[in-house]
Length: 495
Image 1 (cartoon, one colour):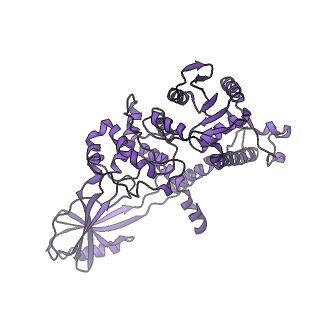
Image 2: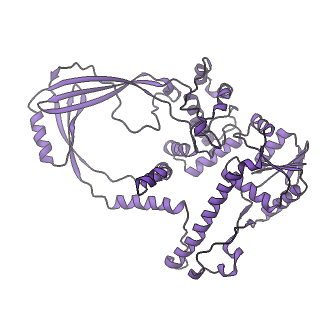
Image 3: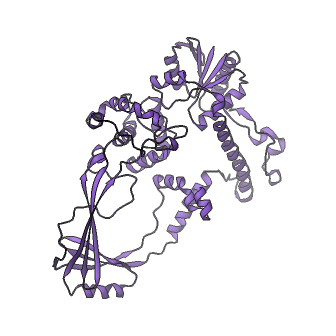
Protein backbone atom coordinates (compact mmCIF):
# COMPACT_ATOMS: atom_id res chain seq x y z
CA UNK A 1 0.00 0.00 0.00
CA UNK A 2 1.03 3.60 -0.63
CA UNK A 3 0.53 5.62 2.53
CA UNK A 4 -0.28 9.33 2.15
CA UNK A 5 0.01 11.52 5.25
CA UNK A 6 -1.74 14.92 5.21
CA UNK A 7 -1.57 17.68 7.80
CA UNK A 8 -5.25 17.62 8.80
CA UNK A 9 -8.35 15.43 8.23
CA UNK A 10 -10.06 17.88 5.81
CA UNK A 11 -7.03 17.89 3.47
CA UNK A 12 -6.77 14.09 3.71
CA UNK A 13 -10.42 13.82 2.55
CA UNK A 14 -9.72 16.02 -0.49
CA UNK A 15 -6.67 13.93 -1.45
CA UNK A 16 -8.47 10.62 -0.85
CA UNK A 17 -11.35 11.70 -3.09
CA UNK A 18 -8.99 12.52 -5.98
CA UNK A 19 -7.08 9.24 -5.51
CA UNK A 20 -10.26 7.16 -5.46
CA UNK A 21 -9.84 6.06 -1.83
CA UNK A 22 -13.36 5.87 -0.43
CA UNK A 23 -13.36 3.30 2.38
CA UNK A 24 -13.45 5.04 5.76
CA UNK A 25 -11.31 3.27 8.35
CA UNK A 26 -10.28 4.18 11.89
CA UNK A 27 -7.86 7.12 11.39
CA UNK A 28 -7.41 6.76 7.62
CA UNK A 29 -9.21 6.34 4.28
CA UNK A 30 -8.38 3.37 2.04
CA UNK A 31 -8.86 2.41 -1.58
CA UNK A 32 -7.31 2.13 -5.05
CA UNK A 33 -3.95 1.07 -3.57
CA UNK A 34 -3.72 4.05 -1.19
CA UNK A 35 -4.15 4.61 2.53
CA UNK A 36 -4.63 8.31 3.30
CA UNK A 37 -4.05 9.29 6.92
CA UNK A 38 -3.47 12.60 8.71
CA UNK A 39 -1.93 14.48 11.60
CA UNK A 40 -3.55 17.38 13.50
CA UNK A 41 -0.84 19.89 12.72
CA UNK A 42 1.90 19.18 15.25
CA UNK A 43 1.77 15.64 16.69
CA UNK A 44 5.39 15.81 17.82
CA UNK A 45 7.50 18.47 19.47
CA UNK A 46 11.06 18.90 20.73
CA UNK A 47 11.66 17.29 24.10
CA UNK A 48 11.49 19.54 27.16
CA UNK A 49 14.47 20.12 29.49
CA UNK A 50 13.32 17.55 32.07
CA UNK A 51 13.20 14.90 29.32
CA UNK A 52 16.98 15.20 28.94
CA UNK A 53 18.27 15.44 32.51
CA UNK A 54 16.89 15.24 36.06
CA UNK A 55 18.91 18.30 37.12
CA UNK A 56 17.04 20.35 34.50
CA UNK A 57 13.67 19.68 36.17
CA UNK A 58 14.40 22.41 38.72
CA UNK A 59 14.74 26.03 37.58
CA UNK A 60 18.15 27.16 38.82
CA UNK A 61 20.92 29.45 37.53
CA UNK A 62 23.53 26.73 38.06
CA UNK A 63 21.83 24.55 35.39
CA UNK A 64 22.10 27.26 32.72
CA UNK A 65 22.75 27.19 29.86
CA UNK A 66 20.84 24.00 29.03
CA UNK A 67 22.24 22.63 25.75
CA UNK A 68 21.30 19.01 25.02
CA UNK A 69 24.08 16.97 23.39
CA UNK A 70 21.51 15.90 20.80
CA UNK A 71 17.98 17.22 20.39
CA UNK A 72 15.15 14.69 20.45
CA UNK A 73 11.45 14.72 19.67
CA UNK A 74 8.46 13.36 21.55
CA UNK A 75 4.77 12.85 21.01
CA UNK A 76 2.59 15.66 22.38
CA UNK A 77 0.71 14.36 25.41
CA UNK A 78 -2.89 14.18 24.19
CA UNK A 79 -5.08 11.04 23.99
CA UNK A 80 -6.43 11.93 20.49
CA UNK A 81 -2.91 12.59 19.17
CA UNK A 82 -1.56 9.39 20.72
CA UNK A 83 -4.38 7.29 19.21
CA UNK A 84 -3.86 8.82 15.73
CA UNK A 85 -0.08 8.35 15.97
CA UNK A 86 -0.55 4.61 16.61
CA UNK A 87 -2.60 4.41 13.38
CA UNK A 88 0.12 6.27 11.43
CA UNK A 89 2.87 4.10 12.96
CA UNK A 90 1.08 0.85 11.98
CA UNK A 91 0.39 2.05 8.43
CA UNK A 92 3.99 3.18 7.89
CA UNK A 93 5.50 -0.06 9.13
CA UNK A 94 3.55 -1.95 6.44
CA UNK A 95 3.87 0.65 3.64
CA UNK A 96 5.64 0.08 0.31
CA UNK A 97 6.11 3.87 0.10
CA UNK A 98 5.04 6.99 1.99
CA UNK A 99 3.89 10.22 0.33
CA UNK A 100 4.35 13.31 2.49
CA UNK A 101 1.28 15.47 1.74
CA UNK A 102 1.96 18.09 4.41
CA UNK A 103 1.58 21.80 3.71
CA UNK A 104 4.17 22.74 1.11
CA UNK A 105 6.34 24.96 3.30
CA UNK A 106 9.01 24.92 5.98
CA UNK A 107 6.64 24.25 8.87
CA UNK A 108 4.71 21.56 6.94
CA UNK A 109 7.97 19.79 6.12
CA UNK A 110 9.08 19.83 9.77
CA UNK A 111 5.71 18.64 11.16
CA UNK A 112 5.50 15.62 8.87
CA UNK A 113 9.16 14.59 9.08
CA UNK A 114 9.06 14.52 12.86
CA UNK A 115 6.04 12.19 12.74
CA UNK A 116 7.74 9.91 10.18
CA UNK A 117 10.91 9.83 12.29
CA UNK A 118 8.97 9.03 15.45
CA UNK A 119 7.03 6.30 13.62
CA UNK A 120 10.30 4.71 12.45
CA UNK A 121 9.47 5.04 8.75
CA UNK A 122 12.06 3.11 6.67
CA UNK A 123 10.37 2.76 3.25
CA UNK A 124 10.95 5.22 0.35
CA UNK A 125 9.37 8.63 0.93
CA UNK A 126 8.10 11.01 -1.75
CA UNK A 127 6.81 14.58 -1.51
CA UNK A 128 3.53 16.00 -2.83
CA UNK A 129 4.30 19.67 -3.52
CA UNK A 130 1.23 21.71 -4.54
CA UNK A 131 0.11 25.33 -4.23
CA UNK A 132 -3.65 24.73 -4.11
CA UNK A 133 -6.09 21.97 -3.19
CA UNK A 134 -8.05 21.94 -6.44
CA UNK A 135 -8.58 18.53 -8.06
CA UNK A 136 -6.38 19.61 -10.99
CA UNK A 137 -3.52 20.66 -8.68
CA UNK A 138 -3.70 17.42 -6.63
CA UNK A 139 -3.74 15.23 -9.78
CA UNK A 140 -0.84 17.17 -11.28
CA UNK A 141 1.07 16.93 -7.98
CA UNK A 142 0.69 13.13 -7.83
CA UNK A 143 1.85 12.85 -11.44
CA UNK A 144 5.02 14.73 -10.50
CA UNK A 145 5.88 13.46 -7.02
CA UNK A 146 9.29 14.64 -5.89
CA UNK A 147 12.06 12.83 -4.04
CA UNK A 148 12.05 13.52 -0.30
CA UNK A 149 15.78 14.31 -0.51
CA UNK A 150 15.00 17.45 -2.57
CA UNK A 151 13.54 19.01 0.57
CA UNK A 152 16.32 18.13 3.02
CA UNK A 153 17.50 21.74 3.32
CA UNK A 154 13.93 22.95 3.88
CA UNK A 155 13.56 20.47 6.75
CA UNK A 156 16.94 21.51 8.17
CA UNK A 157 15.90 25.17 8.04
CA UNK A 158 12.70 24.36 9.98
CA UNK A 159 14.65 22.21 12.45
CA UNK A 160 17.26 24.94 12.97
CA UNK A 161 14.52 27.45 13.66
CA UNK A 162 12.84 25.11 16.17
CA UNK A 163 16.15 24.41 17.94
CA UNK A 164 17.01 28.14 17.97
CA UNK A 165 13.63 28.92 19.50
CA UNK A 166 14.17 26.18 22.12
CA UNK A 167 17.67 27.33 23.10
CA UNK A 168 16.70 30.97 23.48
CA UNK A 169 13.23 30.39 24.90
CA UNK A 170 14.06 27.74 27.48
CA UNK A 171 17.31 29.32 28.72
CA UNK A 172 16.39 33.01 28.61
CA UNK A 173 12.92 32.44 30.10
CA UNK A 174 14.45 30.59 33.07
CA UNK A 175 17.23 33.18 33.45
CA UNK A 176 14.91 36.20 33.47
CA UNK A 177 12.27 34.47 35.60
CA UNK A 178 14.81 33.47 38.26
CA UNK A 179 16.50 36.89 38.23
CA UNK A 180 13.55 39.23 37.84
CA UNK A 181 10.29 37.28 38.21
CA UNK A 182 8.39 38.19 41.37
CA UNK A 183 5.79 36.10 43.18
CA UNK A 184 6.41 33.08 40.91
CA UNK A 185 5.73 35.18 37.80
CA UNK A 186 7.13 33.58 34.63
CA UNK A 187 8.88 36.07 32.33
CA UNK A 188 8.56 34.51 28.90
CA UNK A 189 11.35 35.32 26.41
CA UNK A 190 11.07 34.38 22.73
CA UNK A 191 12.90 34.90 19.45
CA UNK A 192 9.98 36.81 17.88
CA UNK A 193 7.87 37.94 20.82
CA UNK A 194 10.65 39.73 22.74
CA UNK A 195 11.98 41.96 19.90
CA UNK A 196 8.38 42.69 18.89
CA UNK A 197 7.55 43.71 22.45
CA UNK A 198 10.66 45.93 22.38
CA UNK A 199 9.35 47.69 19.25
CA UNK A 200 6.07 48.45 21.07
CA UNK A 201 7.78 49.54 24.32
CA UNK A 202 10.28 51.79 22.52
CA UNK A 203 7.50 53.41 20.48
CA UNK A 204 5.47 54.02 23.66
CA UNK A 205 8.55 55.56 25.32
CA UNK A 206 8.89 57.94 22.33
CA UNK A 207 5.22 58.90 22.72
CA UNK A 208 5.47 59.37 26.51
CA UNK A 209 8.65 61.49 26.26
CA UNK A 210 7.47 63.54 23.31
CA UNK A 211 7.40 67.30 23.83
CA UNK A 212 5.24 69.09 21.24
CA UNK A 213 6.78 72.17 19.63
CA UNK A 214 5.04 74.84 17.56
CA UNK A 215 5.93 75.74 13.99
CA UNK A 216 4.39 78.09 11.46
CA UNK A 217 3.65 77.60 7.76
CA UNK A 218 3.06 80.43 5.31
CA UNK A 219 0.33 79.72 2.74
CA UNK A 220 -1.74 81.82 0.42
CA UNK A 221 -5.02 81.27 -1.41
CA UNK A 222 -5.08 82.40 -5.02
CA UNK A 223 -8.03 81.53 -7.31
CA UNK A 224 -9.41 79.09 -4.66
CA UNK A 225 -6.11 77.19 -4.71
CA UNK A 226 -3.85 76.96 -1.65
CA UNK A 227 -0.16 77.58 -2.41
CA UNK A 228 2.56 76.82 0.16
CA UNK A 229 5.69 78.92 0.64
CA UNK A 230 8.71 76.96 -0.61
CA UNK A 231 10.77 78.23 2.34
CA UNK A 232 9.09 75.55 4.45
CA UNK A 233 8.37 75.76 8.18
CA UNK A 234 9.25 78.63 10.49
CA UNK A 235 10.33 77.70 14.01
CA UNK A 236 9.91 81.31 15.19
CA UNK A 237 6.61 83.12 14.85
CA UNK A 238 8.34 86.49 14.36
CA UNK A 239 10.17 85.21 11.29
CA UNK A 240 6.91 83.92 9.78
CA UNK A 241 5.14 87.22 10.54
CA UNK A 242 7.90 89.16 8.79
CA UNK A 243 7.32 87.13 5.60
CA UNK A 244 3.54 87.46 6.01
CA UNK A 245 3.89 91.24 6.16
CA UNK A 246 5.88 91.21 2.91
CA UNK A 247 3.36 89.09 0.94
CA UNK A 248 0.34 91.09 2.15
CA UNK A 249 1.51 94.15 0.23
CA UNK A 250 1.60 92.80 -3.32
CA UNK A 251 -0.38 90.68 -5.75
CA UNK A 252 0.36 87.02 -6.45
CA UNK A 253 2.04 86.24 -9.80
CA UNK A 254 2.23 82.84 -11.51
CA UNK A 255 5.89 82.36 -12.54
CA UNK A 256 5.96 78.82 -13.98
CA UNK A 257 3.70 75.93 -14.93
CA UNK A 258 5.06 72.46 -15.62
CA UNK A 259 3.21 69.28 -16.48
CA UNK A 260 4.68 65.83 -16.18
CA UNK A 261 2.93 62.73 -17.47
CA UNK A 262 3.55 59.47 -15.66
CA UNK A 263 2.21 56.04 -14.81
CA UNK A 264 1.03 54.35 -11.65
CA UNK A 265 1.43 50.59 -11.56
CA UNK A 266 -1.16 48.20 -10.19
CA UNK A 267 -0.54 47.17 -6.56
CA UNK A 268 1.54 44.03 -6.21
CA UNK A 269 -0.07 40.66 -5.58
CA UNK A 270 -0.39 39.59 -1.96
CA UNK A 271 2.07 37.74 0.19
CA UNK A 272 0.81 36.79 3.66
CA UNK A 273 2.12 39.89 5.44
CA UNK A 274 0.73 42.39 2.93
CA UNK A 275 -2.64 40.61 3.05
CA UNK A 276 -2.63 40.79 6.86
CA UNK A 277 -1.73 44.50 6.70
CA UNK A 278 -4.49 45.26 4.17
CA UNK A 279 -7.13 43.28 6.12
CA UNK A 280 -6.17 45.09 9.31
CA UNK A 281 -6.43 48.50 7.64
CA UNK A 282 -9.68 47.76 5.81
CA UNK A 283 -11.56 45.43 8.15
CA UNK A 284 -9.64 45.66 11.47
CA UNK A 285 -8.91 41.91 11.29
CA UNK A 286 -6.00 40.76 13.45
CA UNK A 287 -3.09 39.01 11.78
CA UNK A 288 -4.33 35.74 13.26
CA UNK A 289 -7.89 36.37 11.98
CA UNK A 290 -6.57 36.92 8.46
CA UNK A 291 -4.35 33.84 8.57
CA UNK A 292 -7.27 31.67 9.67
CA UNK A 293 -9.53 33.12 6.95
CA UNK A 294 -7.02 32.72 4.12
CA UNK A 295 -6.16 29.21 5.36
CA UNK A 296 -9.88 28.37 5.22
CA UNK A 297 -10.10 29.78 1.67
CA UNK A 298 -7.13 27.59 0.72
CA UNK A 299 -8.84 24.53 2.17
CA UNK A 300 -12.03 25.45 0.30
CA UNK A 301 -9.87 25.35 -2.88
CA UNK A 302 -10.59 28.95 -3.90
CA UNK A 303 -7.17 30.49 -3.16
CA UNK A 304 -3.60 29.21 -3.31
CA UNK A 305 -1.22 28.32 -0.46
CA UNK A 306 -1.21 31.23 2.02
CA UNK A 307 2.05 31.09 4.01
CA UNK A 308 4.14 32.80 1.35
CA UNK A 309 6.67 35.64 1.41
CA UNK A 310 6.69 36.70 -2.24
CA UNK A 311 4.43 38.96 -4.29
CA UNK A 312 5.46 37.38 -7.62
CA UNK A 313 4.28 34.48 -9.77
CA UNK A 314 6.49 31.92 -11.49
CA UNK A 315 6.50 31.76 -15.30
CA UNK A 316 4.67 28.40 -15.33
CA UNK A 317 1.55 30.13 -13.94
CA UNK A 318 1.22 32.40 -17.01
CA UNK A 319 -0.49 29.81 -19.32
CA UNK A 320 -3.02 29.09 -16.54
CA UNK A 321 -4.09 32.73 -16.10
CA UNK A 322 -6.94 32.72 -18.68
CA UNK A 323 -8.66 29.72 -17.05
CA UNK A 324 -8.22 31.23 -13.61
CA UNK A 325 -9.80 34.50 -14.77
CA UNK A 326 -12.69 32.59 -16.41
CA UNK A 327 -13.34 30.87 -13.08
CA UNK A 328 -13.89 34.22 -11.32
CA UNK A 329 -17.59 34.09 -12.22
CA UNK A 330 -18.55 36.92 -9.85
CA UNK A 331 -16.15 39.30 -11.58
CA UNK A 332 -16.97 38.74 -15.26
CA UNK A 333 -17.40 42.47 -15.98
CA UNK A 334 -13.83 43.04 -14.82
CA UNK A 335 -12.25 39.93 -16.34
CA UNK A 336 -13.91 40.28 -19.79
CA UNK A 337 -11.64 43.14 -21.01
CA UNK A 338 -8.52 41.17 -19.97
CA UNK A 339 -9.68 37.96 -21.65
CA UNK A 340 -10.59 39.82 -24.85
CA UNK A 341 -6.94 40.54 -25.65
CA UNK A 342 -3.53 38.89 -25.20
CA UNK A 343 -2.81 38.77 -21.49
CA UNK A 344 0.28 40.86 -20.68
CA UNK A 345 3.28 39.17 -19.06
CA UNK A 346 4.93 41.79 -16.88
CA UNK A 347 8.17 41.36 -14.91
CA UNK A 348 6.33 43.10 -12.07
CA UNK A 349 4.09 40.03 -11.86
CA UNK A 350 6.07 37.08 -13.29
CA UNK A 351 9.63 36.61 -12.06
CA UNK A 352 11.08 33.17 -11.34
CA UNK A 353 14.02 34.68 -9.48
CA UNK A 354 11.64 36.14 -6.84
CA UNK A 355 9.79 32.84 -6.22
CA UNK A 356 11.22 30.09 -4.01
CA UNK A 357 8.82 27.51 -2.55
CA UNK A 358 5.58 29.21 -3.55
CA UNK A 359 4.20 32.07 -5.60
CA UNK A 360 2.01 34.94 -4.38
CA UNK A 361 -1.51 34.33 -3.06
CA UNK A 362 -3.99 34.27 -5.97
CA UNK A 363 -7.44 32.79 -6.69
CA UNK A 364 -7.48 29.23 -8.06
CA UNK A 365 -10.32 29.88 -10.48
CA UNK A 366 -12.67 27.54 -8.60
CA UNK A 367 -15.96 29.50 -8.19
CA UNK A 368 -16.14 30.89 -4.67
CA UNK A 369 -19.28 29.49 -3.07
CA UNK A 370 -20.46 28.99 0.54
CA UNK A 371 -18.07 31.56 1.98
CA UNK A 372 -18.69 33.33 5.27
CA UNK A 373 -19.00 37.13 5.21
CA UNK A 374 -15.40 37.59 6.41
CA UNK A 375 -14.05 34.95 4.03
CA UNK A 376 -15.79 36.79 1.20
CA UNK A 377 -14.07 40.06 2.20
CA UNK A 378 -10.62 38.46 2.12
CA UNK A 379 -11.37 36.59 -1.11
CA UNK A 380 -12.52 39.83 -2.75
CA UNK A 381 -9.20 41.52 -1.94
CA UNK A 382 -7.22 38.59 -3.41
CA UNK A 383 -9.40 38.34 -6.53
CA UNK A 384 -9.30 42.06 -7.33
CA UNK A 385 -5.52 42.28 -6.86
CA UNK A 386 -5.12 39.36 -9.26
CA UNK A 387 -7.41 40.87 -11.91
CA UNK A 388 -5.78 44.33 -11.58
CA UNK A 389 -2.35 42.81 -12.26
CA UNK A 390 -3.37 42.28 -15.91
CA UNK A 391 -4.95 45.69 -16.47
CA UNK A 392 -3.15 48.62 -18.14
CA UNK A 393 -1.17 51.06 -16.01
CA UNK A 394 -2.96 54.14 -14.71
CA UNK A 395 -1.90 57.20 -16.74
CA UNK A 396 -1.56 60.36 -14.66
CA UNK A 397 -0.54 63.94 -15.19
CA UNK A 398 1.17 65.89 -12.42
CA UNK A 399 0.98 69.68 -12.70
CA UNK A 400 3.25 71.94 -10.65
CA UNK A 401 2.48 75.67 -10.48
CA UNK A 402 5.04 78.10 -9.07
CA UNK A 403 4.15 81.62 -7.93
CA UNK A 404 5.78 84.64 -6.35
CA UNK A 405 4.85 87.55 -4.13
CA UNK A 406 7.70 90.04 -3.92
CA UNK A 407 10.70 87.75 -3.23
CA UNK A 408 8.69 84.93 -1.58
CA UNK A 409 8.18 81.79 -3.70
CA UNK A 410 5.09 79.58 -3.53
CA UNK A 411 4.20 76.20 -5.01
CA UNK A 412 1.24 73.87 -5.51
CA UNK A 413 1.03 70.44 -7.10
CA UNK A 414 -2.07 68.74 -8.49
CA UNK A 415 -2.60 65.34 -10.02
CA UNK A 416 -5.06 64.35 -12.70
CA UNK A 417 -5.94 60.80 -13.75
CA UNK A 418 -5.90 60.68 -17.56
CA UNK A 419 -6.69 56.96 -17.97
CA UNK A 420 -7.72 55.01 -14.86
CA UNK A 421 -6.34 51.66 -16.08
CA UNK A 422 -6.21 49.19 -13.19
CA UNK A 423 -8.05 51.58 -10.86
CA UNK A 424 -11.42 50.59 -12.38
CA UNK A 425 -11.01 47.16 -10.76
CA UNK A 426 -11.21 48.73 -7.32
CA UNK A 427 -13.62 51.58 -7.99
CA UNK A 428 -12.99 55.31 -8.13
CA UNK A 429 -11.94 55.66 -4.51
CA UNK A 430 -9.05 53.21 -4.74
CA UNK A 431 -5.53 54.48 -4.28
CA UNK A 432 -2.44 52.34 -4.55
CA UNK A 433 -2.32 50.65 -1.12
CA UNK A 434 1.49 50.46 -1.27
CA UNK A 435 1.99 54.11 -2.20
CA UNK A 436 3.42 56.70 0.17
CA UNK A 437 1.09 59.56 1.14
CA UNK A 438 1.23 62.35 -1.47
CA UNK A 439 0.20 65.97 -1.68
CA UNK A 440 -3.46 66.77 -2.21
CA UNK A 441 -4.66 65.00 -5.30
CA UNK A 442 -6.88 67.26 -7.31
CA UNK A 443 -7.28 68.99 -10.62
CA UNK A 444 -5.92 72.54 -10.57
CA UNK A 445 -7.57 75.46 -12.39
CA UNK A 446 -6.05 76.47 -15.73
CA UNK A 447 -3.31 78.91 -14.76
CA UNK A 448 -1.38 81.06 -17.25
CA UNK A 449 2.25 81.98 -16.75
CA UNK A 450 2.55 85.66 -15.87
CA UNK A 451 -1.03 86.08 -14.63
CA UNK A 452 -1.39 88.10 -11.47
CA UNK A 453 -4.05 89.00 -8.94
CA UNK A 454 -5.13 89.41 -5.32
CA UNK A 455 -4.61 86.57 -2.83
CA UNK A 456 -5.24 85.75 0.85
CA UNK A 457 -2.04 84.93 2.78
CA UNK A 458 -2.25 83.08 6.09
CA UNK A 459 0.34 82.12 8.69
CA UNK A 460 -0.82 78.83 10.11
CA UNK A 461 0.36 77.68 13.53
CA UNK A 462 0.78 73.90 13.93
CA UNK A 463 2.26 71.73 16.68
CA UNK A 464 4.50 68.74 16.14
CA UNK A 465 2.79 65.46 16.97
CA UNK A 466 4.18 62.33 18.63
CA UNK A 467 4.71 59.10 16.69
CA UNK A 468 1.51 57.09 16.38
CA UNK A 469 1.10 53.93 18.49
CA UNK A 470 1.51 50.77 16.45
CA UNK A 471 -1.60 49.25 14.96
CA UNK A 472 -1.47 45.59 14.05
CA UNK A 473 -0.91 46.61 10.40
CA UNK A 474 1.98 49.00 11.13
CA UNK A 475 3.50 46.55 13.62
CA UNK A 476 3.51 43.80 10.97
CA UNK A 477 5.30 46.16 8.57
CA UNK A 478 7.80 47.13 11.29
CA UNK A 479 8.51 43.44 12.00
CA UNK A 480 9.01 42.76 8.31
CA UNK A 481 11.41 45.70 7.88
CA UNK A 482 13.09 45.46 11.30
CA UNK A 483 16.47 45.41 9.55
CA UNK A 484 16.12 49.16 8.99
CA UNK A 485 16.60 49.63 12.73
CA UNK A 486 19.96 47.75 12.83
CA UNK A 487 23.19 49.33 14.05
CA UNK A 488 25.78 49.75 11.31
CA UNK A 489 25.12 50.07 7.57
CA UNK A 490 26.51 46.61 6.73
CA UNK A 491 24.23 44.95 9.31
CA UNK A 492 21.22 46.93 8.07
CA UNK A 493 21.76 45.93 4.44
CA UNK A 494 22.22 42.27 5.42
CA UNK A 495 18.99 42.27 7.43
